Image 1 (cartoon, rainbow, N blue to C red):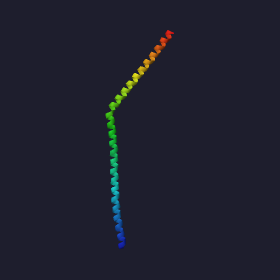
Image 2 (image 1 turned 180 degrees about the horizontal axis):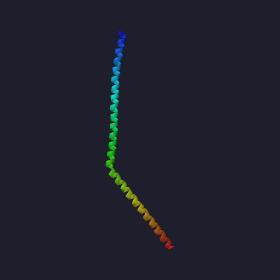
Image 3 (image 1 turned 180 degrees about the vertical axis):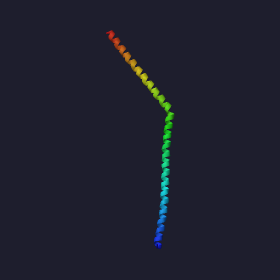
Image 4 (image 1 turned 120 degrees about the vertical axis):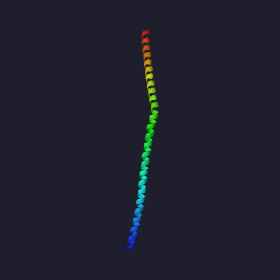
Length: 95
């Protein structure tokens, strides 16, 4: 092997080692980034379920109140219909 070839081989080896270090660093950074992304979404899911757990009694209370209001409105509508039918019956008797 000539000195030029040896020098070229050593330079190539040095560049290969340097590239290997850079690639390992990139790979390490990607793993760390992926771990942080997973942690981010896990935290978002935990906070979402926690918020639902805390808000659930209030939501159920509101749904119950809405059902009560709807039932009351149906009762009022029934009373209005009964009043109209009584008024119609009274009109037919008066004629």
